[in-house]
Amino acid sequence: MTNDTTDGWTGWRAATEAALYGPDGFYRRPEGPAGHFRTSVHASALFAGAVARLLCRLDVALGRPARLDFVDMAAGWGELAAGVLAALPAEVSARTRAYAVEIADRPAGLDHRIEWLSEPPSRITGLLFANEWLDNVPVEIAETDSAGVPRRVLVRRDGRERLGEPVAGAEAEWLRRWWPLPAEEGLRAEIGLPRDEAWAAAVATVGRGLAVAVDYAHTAAARPPFGTLTGFREGRESAPVPDGSCDLTAHVALDACALPGGRLLAQRDALRALGLTGTRPPLSLASAQPAEYLRALTRAGEAAELTAAGGLGDFGWLLQPVGLDGPLVDALLVDVPDHEEQ
Image (cartoon, rainbow, N blue to C red):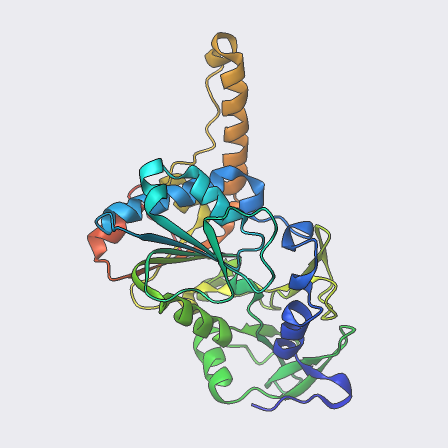
């Protein structure tokens, strides 16, 4: 694959890599990712509690091993790993070894039980959880030209774009299989091959257990015709400019990432199966136990946000079991209803 860097023009994959992860990249900024966008982890501690519940179910499925691993991929400041440890029962917590995988430096004050790594450990027995990781794995952008030919989109640091050479090789094959572009000028796709490879590599670190990817997602039945590349700065969506000043993200073709045995579902279904319903407490509790009623009402509101249609509930979950048979995997999310793929 060629990469035209003449006069600062380069493919979106290289531009995003430098803008996010370079020496002065967005993910190395002192305020951290939480200073610019809010994930399910930041929305409520209920999310970490649900992940802890999944880890406990997995612990049973694995036969309660002497060491249970929890790996938080793209950990930010380690908020999810810390929340999961805090939510685990004492007996499970005592056997759990937690890892936060992140390119930035370890934040001050993080729970000493969490090991900070730049790459996931090998031979994991337990749960690898990647919340909003794959959407930040840089990809090339393709756009059809006036002749209907998909071409790589080149970009400069200021965000200006132009079309480059036709998409070829493995990238062209990925487009044909997972995101075929009609011969209509201006249609765009994000070539998810690097994400497929990154996910396969992460899953390969699991010796026995489960890998879960949670992200903005779409499947072959509903690919967005103009792609999804965007930026986030200080809590607001912004133009995607690869200068290090903003996050750069694009939704994930999770069906392409899935390996044999993988299961796709919506976040609302996963979290409901893990005990989050958003059901309001009965009004009778307000007079009998007003403090408990207010706590329950707060929990219901937070659960409703995490499972809301049109919001966080639309996120995709990809569950990838390793060394577990079908019945054991089904037992992890026994209450998930049948549903159509997103």
